[in-house]
Picture 1 (cartoon, rainbow over the protein chains, first blue to last red):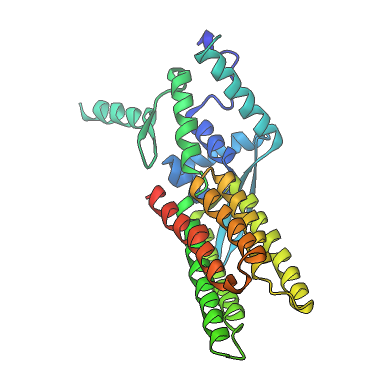
Picture 2 (cartoon, rainbow over the protein chains, first blue to last red; picture 1 turned 120 degrees about the vertical axis):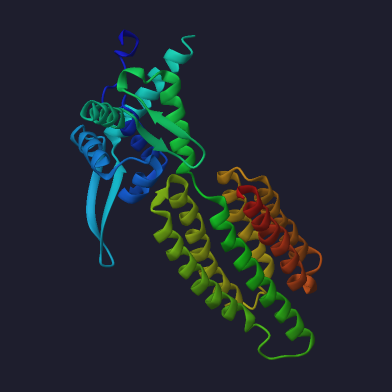
Length: 97
Length: 217
């Protein structure tokens, strides 16, 4: 574990990293899209999304699309910066030179 | 015996969560086992899945290409046969293309569930083009100038730019044929404007559109 001490603990978790990676490639994404792509359970995804929201890495907005509730996720500037830092640290671990 | 077995299975179930992707399945091990390679793999596979979809946008090029070719050839036929409404194909193509694009675009947005980063830029490029076109055509017609050559020169701009942004060379080269055909229309063969426009639409929209669809498939 010592080798990973510098990596952001919020992002260094499979599901949270997968969610942030999806959001990095999108302007915004629906909850169901993230659920489908990550293959996570609804409950687990909700818990991890809350952690990302608490860290201010994402924003979650709720509205209606027709008669159906719509939950949309968006990365924030803080989240983008954290992801870039994480990717930079990761590169340093893989290729220290 | 069975309660222990049940507990063991239940515990395994909680420890092994899987991230399923279209191409592969990433086993969700405990956080301690997340190596840099695992992280990189997750990042790559997720970003690939949320990327801008070529194939879905190829429909717009094929749709508009077909409609505008039909309008151009109808104008050519109309002019050679002395039809008063030889220009009527253009507004009809515009209305049909607008309706078709809106219906398809809305359906695509509903199914997609996300807005890729490139999509906003892509939409903005074509919106600016349409606004410029809507201002240019009446201005040219008002000044008794045949607009086809200028439309071709202008159409090259969003087409080449889209090809560059998507890193799709057939669209870049196809878009460049609008410049070539536009220049030929304006300086060499003004009477062949409709035919040159139709040719540039085949090379600039139809062929790249079909190739785009095949590349993604």
